[in-house]
Length: 91
Image 1 (tube, helix red, strand yellow):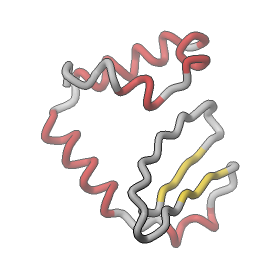
Image 2 (tube, helix red, strand yellow):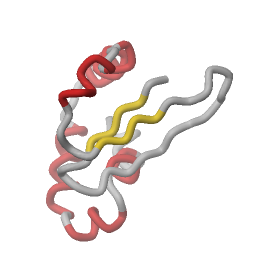
Image 3 (tube, helix red, strand yellow):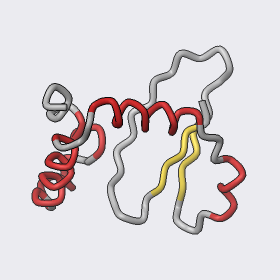
């Protein structure tokens, strides 16, 4: 997990959040470093296969749902900026 520990925080946190909450970011990095790589990969595969569209109506927080065009090769990078922000992708 050390191989990805430097590239994960910039994908999960904005620079502003990292500057304001370094302890929170360090906590997440420590948790990542203690994670079994096979388990991490398995979770990624499970999340990728989840269809959360039926639950969208129950979300009360401001939410962004991104849907690429069928033939698109778009790659999404999203930065969460606060505890009330939720993002779902339908790919």
